[in-house]
Image (cartoon, rainbow, N blue to C red):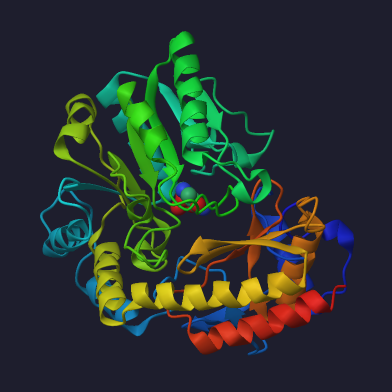
Length: 437
Ligand code: PMP
């Protein structure tokens, strides 16, 4: 059970929604899913608000792709101007592409000095896996137990959160993240390192070797497992001793969202060999990337040609450049830090009064709320999480859920989310949860 529309539930829907759903069912491939028991039909958006076909507004507490705010005028203007001038691929010289590459690389530690563009996070991870394989000569990958890294054949095989219908590859090993809230484990870093070492040994025994450990640095699909800070260090060291790389998947946490730093990996204080980017990079246009140093990229570059028709085109790069400027000019990283802290503080107050709110995790404006049946058993409660997601949708607030048991509320608004937006969200959150005793 995930947050998705179920046509068999036969809920009372408006006629225009029924018409659109029917058209969609007749035309789109059946793998596509709609959010919520009662799907929403949006026609426009601005800042942190989305508007349905009746002009009613919804508070967006979920979407991290329009990270500098929906339809930000500076991004819209930048991409429109570039679209009116030139749009082509990366086989010609282009100022805007180079300027974007330079500005983007400035946000990384100096050693991470090259960018390779892709269109999606999945493509970025696919390319990163290839880079790691060429560099190390090994095939094995280590990922977290409920990881999601994307949709290509290769990457979905390293995305156990896709469920039993998408088999995990023979060359993939899964490791369990610290869940301190439940286990109370005293040495999470040491235990995680030992599990990773076990995976390394097992990959060696099966003839794969270890090419990389791949980690979403906020562990979003694992249930926003943000703490303790630095717990990945020993595991990364073990992978490096085995000749493997550390690939930091920044598709979710990147671009200032975690508040303290621009990149999620910086919270844990260990430098990756490869970083993958996506979602918020161009505020909704398809722009993603792989970042590494020349040495890491070089074997792959020697052995394989890489050309990606749409990746890093001037229009997407112009939008990406505007995103970086808005992040800086509007202080959105600091906003994520302060508003995120305030939100967690207020949520913790609710948790003290209601044992169904088990744990509040996260960093900046990436927050996970672990819903449980009760404070003693800490049994994950997917039903209440889903009910809350749908109840909030009725109250015109958008969130969703994640985690191995689907019981963690995923709170991840566009970065201009303000203190008063937070108050509004929490007022509705309170209404939703206390309406469900
Ligand atoms: N990595 C992570 C951590 C993601 O959450 C996602 C998308 N949800 C991806 C990679 C894949 O990105 P895309 O959908 O752009 O292919």
